[in-house]
Figure 1 (spheres, rainbow, N blue to C red):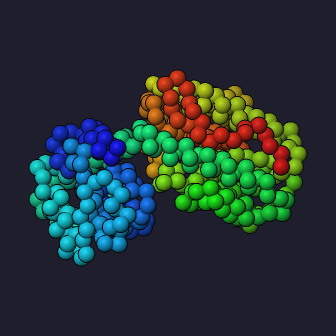
Figure 2: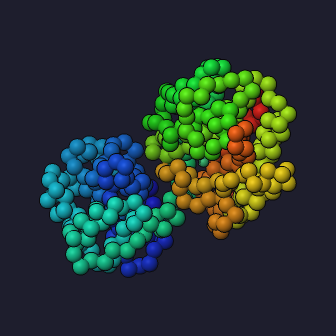
Figure 3: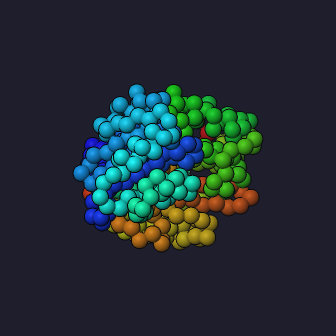
Length: 363
Ligand code: GLY
Ligand code: MN
Ligand code: MN
């Protein structure tokens, strides 16, 4: 499986690249592509490298600390116990004809300069677009992991709603979500959990704070699970107590827009067309200027991964891509509603990976 991923990466590149060097530095300078090509689901692999070749093979260069974990990858293994040995291993692995591909997007400048010095005279080229393009089409193993990540998040949300009470702080609800996800096998949250009550729900990327839940509040939760390094990303908005007329109206518009977006998804459709299917509903209802972001984004080893659904991104959807569909209406000082699901693109439809009811829930 790693062989076919590696071959697909080179298939999206010119023939004059003899090897790609992927470097996973220390937190926060990590490169998900290191994990994509090695398929290592456990371990930190700080300051480790993977060198991959057009024939689908590759070598992991890592320290003794990770030797046991690294053995689970089908790639070759070189273990170093000093910086000097690391440099020698890298030089040996890169001793092939052709240019050297580098992921300019995630390699820190300092590391780039060190590698450049290690293999003086060799030409480095950016392969970040090819890496991203390859990762956008998920294989069977990736889809299984993403389904599990989606299921964990949806189940955790259900469990959290059962303990959500008036007077609870946003951060407490966030903590419950994370606990419920890890209890179900997630290695952690996919990103900092958004738990926002009342007027705070009008800030799309609010995280969580001390605001306590009151009757009549919107309660918006946007969060995800990380499972075997793959992420889910789900949002639901509830109302504490009885929803009023305006809350029902806004919620209904967002729900209709989200369902129209999902309905528009199939292999071959253009991203802007999907965005428009949802956006038109919000515009016609008079809230067009309150839908202040794109309809969705690619999802995978990164939370905001390759591609997306927006009026400007001219991408064509392909079978086995995974995207989010997340329209919202945000009214400053009042509150906001967003509904988000993750979907797998199939030939004629979208398969939802985050199954959770969509009708307005009054808590
Ligand atoms: N959690 C950020 C987003 O939904 O994209
Ligand atoms: Mn989200
Ligand atoms: Mn999202």
